[in-house]
Length: 214
Image: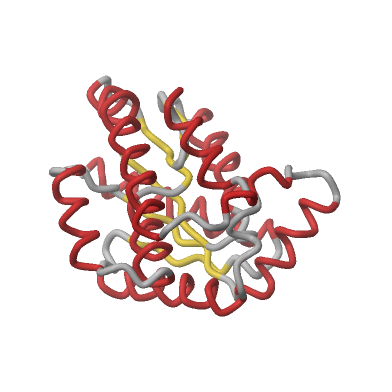
């Protein structure tokens, strides 16, 4: 099973990823946890370029192709081999993030991005996508608190430095994708207490696992 987590900065994906992993481990699933950008040796080098705040001037099209280069490596060397081996793959961000960040927010042509994805992904699509949704103003505040308190490094803060309007476009893009694919997406209100978010996350996961077994 292929499960992806999506959401704006500060939405709590990393925390919930740990909760999901712990739950699946207890249930005996063979799980692999990965992320985009990153997940491979080359991918981590691409990640360092993409998220470095010193690289704020990357052209949108160059940014897009860096993400897609990372994704090709990730799919071929990590995701597909793990799925072929019967493992459950948990991925922090995947192709939906590219659609909303480089498409809805940067303004690149959505049809062009989808054509690139058809070439790269072929038939690969997440079985379940958990969208952790909250207002960008809250998410950015959380993200900067984590950076300023030392819980996160500032070396990967290029997107946190974007405008609030940019992040509003990202949120709107995610919600539109969820509207278009309601069977795959599950929206979770990430503005609430972490315990409530965890409860809803695990409930969605249980339902998806049950449907997958049928």
